[in-house]
Image (tube, rainbow, N blue to C red; front, side):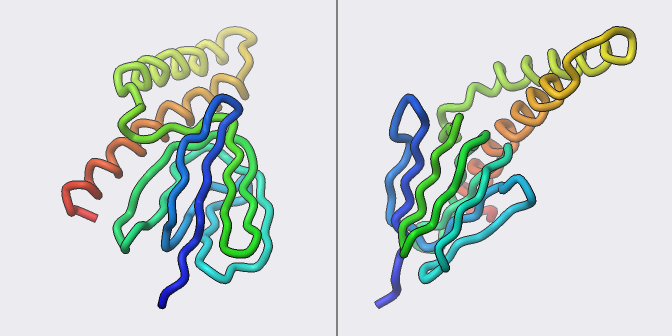
Length: 143
């Protein structure tokens, strides 16, 4: 019998996801990492991006931003500052946030703007849109 991972994704506000999964891939600060059953104990800071997990071999997606991932035994705990399921992502809001962030970055050349904050906002908006697109593609059997 194949082993599974127990995946739990939590934000300060709520439990986002608790599932038995085959695989977890997440954006670490130093790059993406993958976790299979039997992984060694592991702790990583999370970056901004899409977390992909597989259930029954089918990919599923979740947007995460900041926080930590911990692997102990066959349990993966994601403690995220922000975590959103694809269906929770407001695409219009993400597009508007991308537009505002790009305007702030452009204004940075003309005046003093918090560049790091604008860049992070841009990355979050782009990755939210990508999460929705990848989840839609996976649901249609394209991936």
